[in-house]
Length: 323
Image 1 (cartoon, helix red, strand yellow):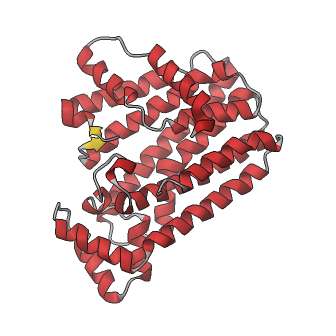
Image 2 (cartoon, one colour):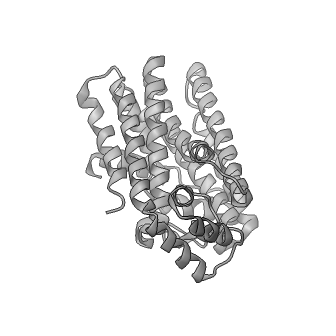
């Protein structure tokens, strides 16, 4: 991802500059732990990319970009608690190391720290960015609740799934781009187009994550292999298997997804059905479809084509993650 190096360096420098030195250490050390673990840091880079696309001031956009990164990590801390996940980025999760209470508090504090990063913006811009940021936060919570609901909900449609991942993942990418565009002074139509580009890119990213959970390696995803199967997540793989599997396979899937367990027979059996139904190929086709939609919105943005190239490269990176 050489084209992202300058943005990654800015984000890393900002995180280092604003490392938490507050007390009590028991609260802030876990926050530093998850922020310093790195990860892809794509969303704060999206803020910077969009700002530069519209000739904005990257220094002005840095703190809002960090706000997005802090918010994202807040959601990861709480997601890991809800999923009882032992690993994040191939490292022990915060609640595994420090307990659930510290995990909840550290996540909450990270969210409030994120809000403070918008304070330097002039009043009208502050209001516009906070409107996007707060609305995004609410949608992420709604998406997470849908995700929890679907673990026990008997009937989950493909549209239900798309709504869930749009809220849980897509809107954060979309809003990251939109905030960067707003800071640069982009007009309304361009800001909405870059939002829609980010939404479909985020959907593609999540579908790829669902794919990698089963068909990728632990090194690629940094999480427990087949964790979605253990947790009875109604991912795109499950829904595609229901659609394209035999009656017998559908019954077997429903049997395994009626119970939550660490039974390896469950993972083996479900993976076998997924492969027979060729859901891996179909999931990657959906990634491509949403990438195509994202490109259509990118084409609508009124800037020179040269400025769009990094966005095409970013989208292509998502499609290469399985390799």
